[in-house]
Length: 89
Image (tube, rainbow, N blue to C red; front, side):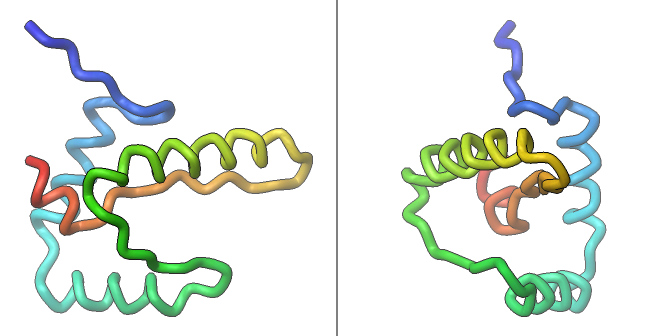
């Protein structure tokens, strides 16, 4: 049996909670969440070819890990986008 490997800070319970959140979300709630993400200051929404997602994620995690060593810096943990979760079930 193949064992699932999760990114640092993630486990099966967390993945299930994220999936449950998106599966129970109404279209209006999903749209509101997407719109709020586009309006966040200090962040950008970028379209990346699907085959590059793992590499981009790795680069962000490397940078976040380095930033977490800076005193007073808050590290944010990324949450997968609704569409990505649906496509990769």
